[in-house]
Amino acid sequence: MHRILQHLHRDHLRLAQLLDLTGRVAVVSGGAGFLGSFVLEKLAERGAAEVFVPRIDEYDLTQPEDID
Image (tube, rainbow, N blue to C red; front, side, top):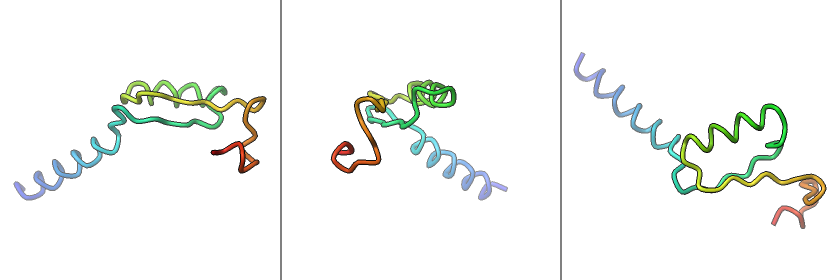
């Protein structure tokens, strides 16, 4: 039983590290929409330092030159 608890604890720590976005930058395509607004909220809760939402009138993400 102790061994199982150790594995669960280790997996939980790995998941926590993956979900910790402290100081990270995120780009959310579709972030201005209904579902995107919830994604933005969760990114902020997880510590994202900056979240960028590209707007179609400024960036056409189908064009390689607009992605850089």
